Image 1 (cartoon, rainbow, N blue to C red):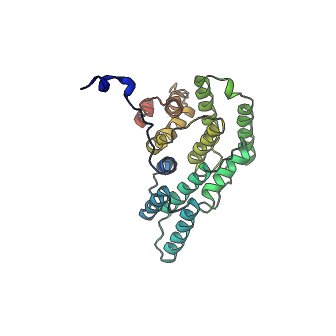
Image 2: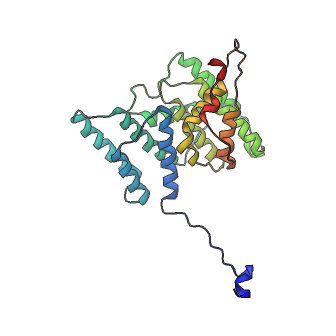
Image 3: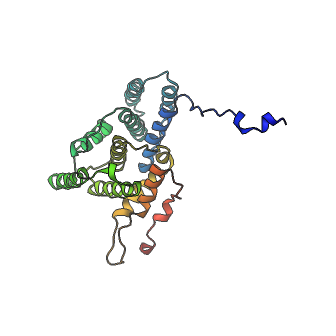
Length: 260
């Protein structure tokens, strides 16, 4: 080996190139991963459309158009799998919203997200259950408190604690009959992006069920058994999401042993 080979100043560093469609794939991973919270699986036809979109031969609008035509034909044949249809269409709309540069910290925007995702899946999309007036007031209260915060002046530790509490509170209201976790996840991700944070979408590919269970655990209490709400699991999720930490995220850790 020559002296030139040993001289580190001669080593050429090259910037790692991301493969074509890398960002698109991350968005699809997040969207499809979120469907796991309701144990939904994609269709084989959808998987081909996603591949074509990532490679650039299909636009996201063409993906949705093809899906609608596909499921119209399936319905005509009396061969419609409703779970696959929900998974495919809602995943596509999550990606659509991720690619649109818009966000508003408001109850109306939260309702808009839910209606957009589930527009032809549920007849009651955007319709709340229970006392809708009370639900709206609860959401408006939580959102008004967050509007008063200045995330730019916070340390990242403070950001994570605040966004954890905000997520937990929004989800706890449970304003919609179905789709609350998927709506909350997308709403919060859009919020974080609007604040200028880089979000690690790969987490939702494999850990969406953990995210849902962490939301549950952050709100569950049982005075009789002296069980308190515990946000620590949700904090671990957001540490991985925003800081790139490697906290172990196992759903079995969230099991409340006292109940068994």
